[in-house]
Amino acid sequence: MSSLLDSVRARFPALAVTDEDQPRIYFDNPAGTQVPDVVIDRVSGYYRETNANYGGRFRTSQATVTLAREAREAMAAFVNAGSADEIVIGPNMTSLTYAASRALAPRFRPGDEILLTRMDHDANVTPWVQLAGRLGLEVRWLDFDTGSYRYDLNRLDELVNERTRLAAINYASNITGTINDVAAIVARVKAASDALCYVDAVQYAPHGDVDVQQLGCDFLVCSAYKFYGPHVGVLWGRGGLLESLTPDKLRAAPDSVPHRFETGCANSEGIAGLLGAIEYYRWLGAQLGEADQRRSIQAAKAWMCEHERTLTGRLIGGLAALPGVTVHGITDADALDARVSTVSVTVAGRNPADLAEALGQHNVFTWSGHNYAVDVIDVLGCADSGGVLRFGPVHYNSIDEVDRVLALMHELVT
Image 1 (tube, rainbow, N blue to C red):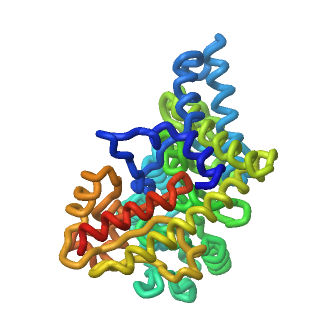
Image 2 (cartoon, one colour; image 1 turned 180 degrees about the vertical axis):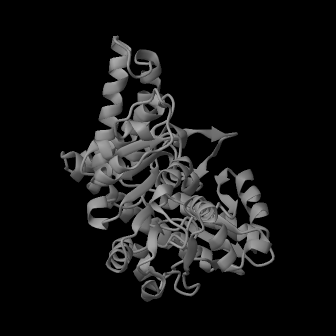
């Protein structure tokens, strides 16, 4: 391993844990990553020194407010938001999306249309389908090609029109790994309609730079526990748009943005951990020579992407060479920059859950099933056979771990 990778791995205490002298190989990262020491320290430090709710006229409450502000500013740099007040922090992406759908409901009228995709996680599908059912909206679907694992963007010209009021878009698939050209999709949608664009970046945010200004979208959601943080979700919303919405809230709750979107007491320990996760990105960027907050995050992401492409290429090549294995996603070694490191496979005649259990017995952690990407699994024709077996190396994983997983898969399928 490189010296930087050694330093990275040393920041993650979970990577040193063994079970009966058997090391753990964390390839379950698409469902949630391990956390670095700074996140653990931020959470425990909050409980030790700062534990209080907002609004008190005493030291710990005021420190909690300051911490939340620092976390919003850090998250604003993470997505290149125009203001920290555009950052809403909630329990998870699903809850935030349901809340957004309810807040947006008054903008729609019966007969309006919304655009959804067949490549999305269900959290960016069902809330909008349910909204459409309640309000009498028409749902139109953007399909993906099962050969290329990409959208045909020319289809947008047929799907989007003056009645389109919202487009819910997937940045990267949590099954196929495909990175979608969100900026191009948003531009086409906006050129043909006055629709709002809601982007699910949960699977992309751990792997690539997120720039909401460049994307041109109106909302973007992601989950901190996918990018080395705690279990909190984050919604970015364009400032003027957030101010125009009236979400469900208690009478006593603040009317200011973003606080009116954050119901109940804040998960302040989670917010502390969110700050720690972005501080980790800044640390990695500093190792690469960047001191500025935004540029250090970008440098860290670039290093992560390069390392993950190496891991992904080796993993895909090894899996595709095994008998009966089908990789559901882009496999061209020259096109790995068009996908994240989430790799899903099926094995002829084998149940994915059985394979995941066998791998787990050897301390290799993976996921199986539909992974909440119900439409993707249906389109791939995998629903009746148990979905897929999903691997997900990230920047703290090593080539040696990939090779050990491939050797174990060879034993299991041959």
